[in-house]
Amino acid sequence: STQQGRAAMKICMIGTGYVGLVVGACLAEMGHEVICVDNNPAKISALLNGQLPIYEPGLERLVERNVLESRLSFSLDISESVAQSQFIFIAVGTPPAEDGSADLTYVMKAVEQIGASIRDYAIVITKSTVPIGSSERIRGIIEKQLKNRGLTDLEFDIVSNPEFLREGAAVNDFLNPNRIVVGSSNPRALAYMEKLYLPLTSKGFPIVHMDIASAELAKYASNAMLATRISFMNEMAGICEAVGADIERVRQGMELDHRIGSYFLSAGVGYGGSCFPKDVRAIIQSATERNIPTHILEAVDKVNHKQKKKLFEMVVGHFGEDLKGLRLAVWGLSFKPETDDIREAPSIETIEQLRKRGVQIQVHDPVALQNAYQALGEENITYFTGLYQALMDADALLIFTEWKQYRSADLGRIKSLLKQPVLFDGRNLFNPYMMKEEGFVYQSIGRMK
Ligand code: NAD
Image 1 (cartoon, rainbow, N blue to C red):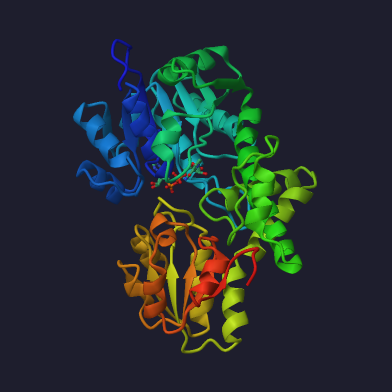
Image 2 (cartoon, rainbow, N blue to C red; image 1 turned 90 degrees about the vertical axis):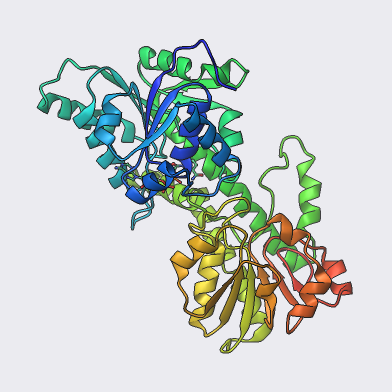
């Protein structure tokens, strides 16, 4: 519901990707006036035509409604959009650079466009995940540009407002946040940010204030903690396999402990996506630059690299080193369910390894086929929109993503379509005993073979 009676605040969202588009649409839903800008003309023209460039549950309706009610608009013109706005969010990508650090090229480009365009007091907010110190660097760049423009009296504030939404549940996460983190050294900026987020805080969602460096680190520390839990459980899964224990039971034995909790305790083929892998490496890099050792973080990353090879190793373990001529079905390409994001997904790396060995691959994913096609092309891969079609004449099925429809798939049908009843399950979707009863050769993570 929109907040009538409150003065709408003018917002420019730079970067209209998974974060920018969701946050922009949600801020509009909260009653603000938002212009989402991007330098990718294809994205903006799609949005202007009412098409979403990404898949995210609930987003289409939200965008449609807010466009209709004139709170949300899209533009390629960054200068004009910045000039009209008081709140300028930076939500461009910060992909990993060669050395693991966050590549700030896009952020800095956006910052220069901001510095060249602001006309009145503005608050520049980093929504992108940026390494500690970036927000201060941003302040320096804008100051310099204002000086060049002869606008030394023009005031602006820098705020770090990291984003914690999850792809696949992004709209709900943004509108019902566990916390809103706002970092700034200026009480004026904090007051404006409180006003901006009032529609959420008035419902009881907490906002926490801190200095900029702490806010920047709070984001990295949160992602690193979640990645740590996953790698921890994957390491336990390896121990389970060696001692004949079952990681699912071990997890059940842990999660009822309130000190531990039940989130992020699933063993699997490792974490992927556009955040955990790059953020863990970026914080390692930030620490290393300052001569701070990162024993835990390095182990988290190392365990994950190893884990991402699990399904490939199962294939080799079962079929032998010579995989030429093999035909394998793959279910699930996105790094997790309810998203079409395939960045650093374990499926993609494994498919590349398999096809290098001469394997023919038949893939299915409910929403990520197009992204996968762009990343992988046609060599040795056939794309299927029907999950059972992808199984035809395959020597085995590999599951990488825990989409609901896989969990509830018809086992008899899987068996009858595969050339051999072999299933390598990277997400522990099925009960190993039942699979054995059904006549499958079934391998999963951290459980009996
Ligand atoms: P994305 O790649 O989906 O979107 C980035 C967008 O910025 C692209 O559309 C790109 O065209 C645009 N862009 C780049 N430079 C631009 C410029 N100068 N002007 C205008 N537009 C420009 O990235 P994302 O997944 O939305 O992530 C954005 C940031 O948010 C990253 O720092 C990421 O770490 C962080 N983050 C992501 C998530 C997530 O779940 N994806 C969650 C929290 C934080």
